[in-house]
Image (cartoon, rainbow over all chains, first blue to last red; front, side, top):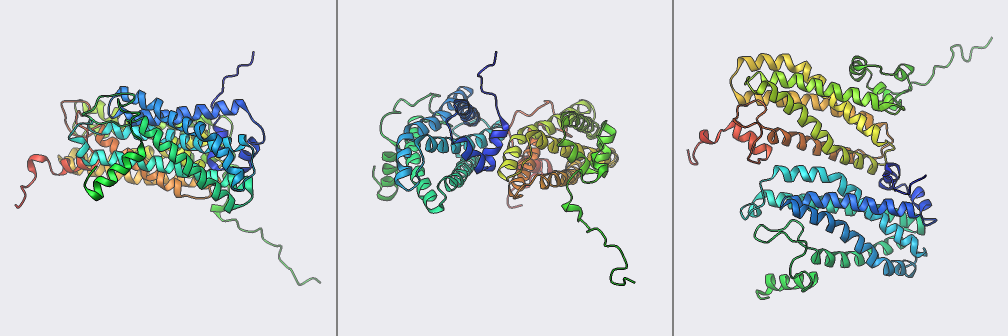
Length: 240
Length: 250
């Protein structure tokens, strides 16, 4: 009896990473549940492994938490913005159906997650070589280096995912200007929601003085942008 | 009488770099065993590249990895003779394990960079090229082993021996990376930027492994270190031991 379990398919992943626009556009012609499950599995595995490597520095329990939270941010951002992103595309000149815009965005996140997953052993190795996180460590070069390395890897994954998304949008719309307009709109919307989700789901690395938690006690108090605003006021005007 | 073309036209000369692995019939001969694999990677690297694209490449990869582990153990044994005692078995184990772990840690990112470069290589081929890198590197290390042994018996300077092993490792790695780059060039990659980035990552991981698994040539009460250190700081401590460091202003 044939099973419906999705198997990892490196051929499709490599086509995605290469930005094989013809094959990817072909996949988008029709909805394929099996492919969707594989893509979701790739996001959960790739982003989850990276999250685990990131959280492991603080505590093994934090590794489990971040392994859940990292893919959750991606999935919630994709799901939460699916409707508005699907509406924006035709309004900005790219006349594609809702399922195609959803698949395109999901694809860019699959690419980013695959890259994050591939870098997770390197991140784990880096964390393994670092002294345990403590009050002294967070003021050391090691903490800064690991933080910067995380930023570099996540930025690289995000940039590559969006570069491939741009190629695909150009292929679907046949026009670079329209593709760029749609990409920038989607990026703005995804960043807006993604930042807030990251704020709610903090901590990721965590601080030595604070307990290991899935969510902070004040997770739903305030928001990312309020915090940026307060920080800005503190720096430039000296009051909160 | 026809005087216009007295000699037959010569076939165009194809530059070696433009040829693909397997264009020469000699490169299509299967690699049957370890000796053939060693000979092939030294004399006919294209044969190895071609065989890695054929069905059943897994066996060749297994052979190359086995040789890499065996050669690492041999070189590790020579490195261990500097200190003797526990290091006679610890150094070979650490060198072989460290090399394999470094390769495993870096394999996923190599595959990702390969795909991002537009290459058509499959995971098994990428893994095979990495196994080829390890095999070539460790074969060369075995070639350097007699020299390393002579020095290890005639000096007591830890810093000198460490530097010597690093120089040998660096030369061997350069040749291994040259094989990897040549193999990569035949996978229709549009850019080498990703591979060059990966090479830096691989070198950093392998160098950090020397600090993570220390001591490899020195003495210690413990098999593995309890204190985490960056490899540069570990090397500096070896060259200028903390108690021998001059006080500031002296």
